[in-house]
Amino acid sequence: MKLAYAGRASGDVDATVTITARAEQPLPGFDLDFRGPKITELSVDGRPATFTRDGQELVVTPAAGIAEGARFTTVVHYAGRPGPLKGDALGTYGWIPSKDGAVALGEPDGTPTWLPVNDHPRDRATYDFHITVPSELQVVANGTPGAVAKHGATTTYDWSETAPMATYLAMVAIGKFDVRRTETGGVPVITAVDPRYAGAARKLERTTVAAMRWGVETFGPYPFPTAGGVIDDPPLDYALESQERPVYGGFSPGERFIVHELAHQWFGDSVGLRDWKDIWLNEGLATYAEWMWTEHKGGESAKSVFKRYYTQPGASPVFAPPPGSPARADLFGFSVYTRGAMCVEALRERVGDKTFVRVLKAWAAQGRAAPVTTADFVAVAEKVSGRRLHRLFNAWLYQKGKPKKW
Ligand code: MET
Image 1 (spheres, helix red, strand yellow):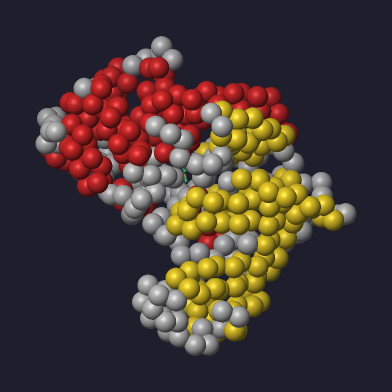
Image 2 (image 1 turned 180 degrees about the vertical axis):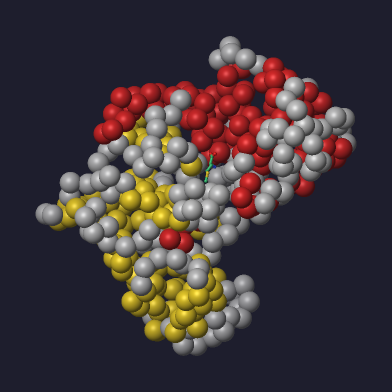
């Protein structure tokens, strides 16, 4: 994608997005998801296509049908000012203006605010970013940095995400940053921090490196070509595990936050969901990684954290709703994270520490092979441990109230 950002005053962008896809069946037409500004041109395989927009649906009818198995290229040109999504239970996300630029954060369905995509966690693709900004600004995106080309008043930054990535993990941050590069175990670590959080830059870099070393020991090889993180200024008060480059929105992250987002690189970004309803696989495991980190550092054990939560009353938000299949508004609810992590502790206590670590490594080792479901996690845990675990997972993921027996 090529995107030119005019600057904070207008917030306008002018973008040309080129999508290469393969038709799995004969296609008279196809739908993309896009909520962005006005589309000025749309072509398929070099010929203008007709299109209609209905809410988020972008319905494309190419001049000629596309044959089964054919590779085809769609080019969408749009111009105007993208904006964030906000107001529902999920807060502010999508294309978000910052003090000096903008930051794009997609989870769960915000990427169509600035990119036409097939917005589904299981539809992964590689991405090339060519982003032009006023020369006083910089650009950070997913993956590996490429050329930086200055043409007087504007500068173009190239980034490429070479590992297939779910749409919700695409990120771009435009603004002024303290950009640092280091490496660990041969993996480049690139961090970028808004000047407002200048004091946090060293800590972000050092903690990311320390957590990576620990993550590699605990979960297995780091799954991507690069790592890092961005602290930007919009006051979002959440972080997102955007692939290779998590974003912390409007705060200086503590160690556990950094560990959480880094753990998602294995659990969520590499081993990725088939459906949003299994979001506990992302958030329960990343939260459990925080508990493991604290234990590893000599702090409270995961078992003790579990016990503390377990003493809460059954109606407490720790337990409700059950984390196994949350409604949209509860996707990032407390129980998905905490009861999800308690489910992982229950598993650890059942199978024992050694087997538990083998389960985590086996789960991470699947990588990007195929999108995963809760049933796949149960199957891996049962296979590695040689035990029947259905009752445990049913109790922790799906039963109402506080699980009593599992
Ligand atoms: N996945 C994020 C996390 O790390 C939450 C994003 S909220 C849209 O917790």
